Each structure stands twice: as structure tokens, then as C-alpha cells.
Image (cartoon, rainbow over all chains, first blue to last red):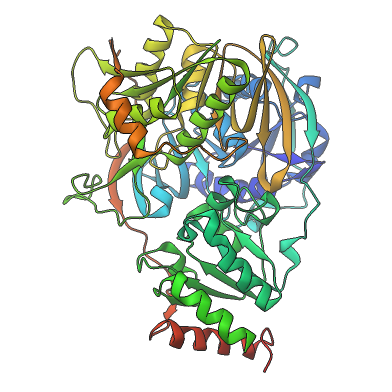
Length: 315
Length: 263
């Protein structure tokens, strides 16, 4: 079973990625692929890739909210008894998967990049420690949960123009009195420029070490006349605006050139930039995962490289 | 108003991580451990709430975690009112390949929280070595408390917490959550404050860590680790050679060929 995610009436690409993979696994087990659609039963038409769409509607589900979604999904799991529940590793997955592991009593693998069924057992590969270590795990028992890294599986196999069978389930009791409520929705702050439309990005990661050092990369971006972007730790530290964040919880970019300075290449960052046409990475750690997606790399220290680049660009 | 902040250290991601010989776990001997980055953000958000409303902030760690004394003294040096070290009454060393398993961690913390309830439990949304789940929702489910993760700000309004939950691409929701509640912090609304070494050393000399023992119940099934390994890169970058000047030349050539540098 896949938990469908949707925003503004659009089912997410991640949902299709999971449906495609679910089909592959279901066929090994001789079972079906079901998609749990909470709150917007009218979107079932976008879920043709599923065998069955299990829809639950209730006013409390109209926008994502942790508690009503958790209660409802638990009810769906109780009624449909899937062998495996797949959720995308994002905000919803971070809210629900571990809680459901407790409540549904099912082992969980988180941040999964590979999934198979081997002799009836679900096996997963999870990424830990910023993608530096992969863990092959067995999820034993009658049921299991996995949160899946975005982009781990293709979206195309999960898409289909046909109509899936829709089953409507009644919402569980208690949705009318949740212990939380949604007060306001804030759309992404348009404000600043849109890095996803830039031809080239100078992107900086943890390797920049401090806010004081940011000015050397700002200088480089300025010399090249292109925007500065960053990985999540730099944005969380407050050194650059959220609108400049590249990655799973930021923006996906596909520039002609992506210059990664001091970025190790954690999976959630790679998800945001791996399709750039030319990736040049600078990191003093020769084992940094960024070198697995970059076209060119160097282990020269960025504090030595950047001033040299600025000098040569300015001529 | 009492805020409990579960904290732990994780291997420093800047370093190379070695695996043990049979590839079932991480070789911890030469690792440097640092306070988890999300726990650091969570502690900061709790301290900001203390600054704003005078809440009591208690940092809690597990006695069997690496570097836990250092972590707790640092929390005190940053302004936490108290720090608690939790031990498992059975004394059994139970841990998984990547440290103490989330189910056991959460069970120990739940035992503590049942005895010493908090209005808010604020922890990092995740930890770099999470394998089988994240702490805040696990705690929420065990204690049957409302829980919200990926929080980027927390405020108090009467008996409720006002939480900003962030989604991919910067969209966010503002939630009103009844307390007691568990919150998983992605980032504090200000960058974490710095505690100078001198203040941490002072805390080590003048403050005490409270010890608390909990009986850990048998935990259920979990994932079984077959093997840990490093990612095989399907491709690899062509590495540019030479010193900084030579590498810079090669990069500028690549950019010039694409019309991104003039000349």
C-alpha cells in the first residue's frame, strides 16, 4: 500500500514513484497495489497506476494534519491489512511512519533507496550518516513499513491513464475532536530570485564552516554573475535564505552548471541537483558521495580554490 | 511550564566512517561524536521558549550513549535548567548496529516522561544515524501524545503550542497543538547559540547531572541488519589534478566552453 500525497489538487511525483515500485513488489507476492487517498477522493483519477484506490473523506482530512491522518491511516491499515506500507521520506513520512510502526506493530526501515522481496521477506537498503553508510535490512514479520527516498524509483511505472477501482472507507471515530488544528497555510515565499531558473549555480555546503566565510563564495557568485545556493545545513544555520536551498526539503534545480563547494552530497541534497548538466564538485574528502554524481571533482580546499577562481574569472 | 529535550550525539559526518570487520556495524573506536545537528536545533528552540516565557528546560540523555556527559554539560552551559542521564535498570547492554535502537531509546524516555511529565517534549526531527524511525513520532505514539515533526518554530499560546511545520519547497502550515505534545524540530527560528568551552568546563565543575533509572520492557520486533556497506558510486567524477591555481584554470575552461565566462 502506498500513501498518496497531494498538494493543491495534484498528486505528488513521489506518490507515482512508490506506486511503480509497489507494483513490482506486489507481482512478486502475487498481490495487489493499493493507494490510500486521504481527504481528496476526487483525485482518484490521477491514481490510475494503482489496482485499488482506498479513499477516505472527512473535513478534518482536507489539508494534511498529523493526527487525523495518523488515525485514519491506522484505520485503513486495519481494514486492508497490506503486507507493506510505503510512504515518501518527507514531512508526512517523518510524522507518520515511526508512529505507525508503534501503533500498527510493524518493523520500519527509514530513508530507503532499494527494496526487494526475497523468499517472502521484505529487504530494504537504508541510507544513514548522510549517505555515507548503507544498511541492508530484513523487515521480518507479516507486515512492514518503509519510508522511501525521493527519486529512488522512477515515476513512470506508477502512472497510468486508466481508472483504478475506488473503495470508500468510512473515517474512524474521533476525527472531529483532534488535539491539533490547522490555523494557516503559508505558500513558499516567492520573494527572492528563483534558483531553479538559473543557468548556473554556485552552491555552498557545510565546508564553508562559518557565516563569516560566506563572503568568499558570495564574491565568486558575483564575479560569475550567477546566484548563490546552498545545501540544507547552511540554510538551517541562517547563513542563506530558505529560497536558496537545494535538495529534498528545498528546491530541485537543473542548471547547465552546478558548482558544489564544500557539499558532501547527502542523499537529500543529491535529490535536488543530480540532473544538472555539468556538476563540478570541490570537497576535501575524496570519499564524499557528491563525487558519485559529479562530472568533475577536486579535493583541493575550497578556501584555496575559490580565490583562484575569482581572480581568473575577473581576469 | 516544563520542556524536556532528549539529546544524543552522533558520529561527526565530516569524518570518514569505518565499518567493523564483519560489516554489521560501525566501528566506534576512533569516531568523534558530536551533538546531533537537529537535536542542537531542538535545544535552541527550547531555550528560545525559555527566554520568551520562562519555561524550565531539562536536557535528557541516555547513560549508554557515547559522549553523553559532554553533551549534557554543554546543554547546561547553553542555559538548560537541568540535565538528566537515564539508565536502564536491567543494565543489559542492548543496542543495534548503529547505536541504541529507536524502540529502546523511546521506551526509556517514555518511562522517564511517565514519571516526570513534561508539557512539551522537543527533540530533533531526526538523527543522522536513524535506521528504524525517528524519535518524536515514536514517543508520541508510545505516550499517546499529539506529535508534529519538521517544526521550524514553536510558540506558546495558553495551553497550546503554535508550531510551524515545513514542507518541501518552503511551503508551511501553522498548527495549534494541545499540550502536552511532542515536537520534532527541523530548525530553530534562530541559529543555535554558542557555549564557549570555558562555560562548558565551568558547568562540569559546578553542575550535577541528575541520574534516573528506568526499567526497560521487552521491545518488539525490529529490522534485522544483514550488512552495512559504503555506497558504490555508479559513476565517478573525473578528478582534476594540480594545485588550486591549476584546478581553477581547468574549471574556468569548462565554464568558458559553455559561455559562462567571457574571454
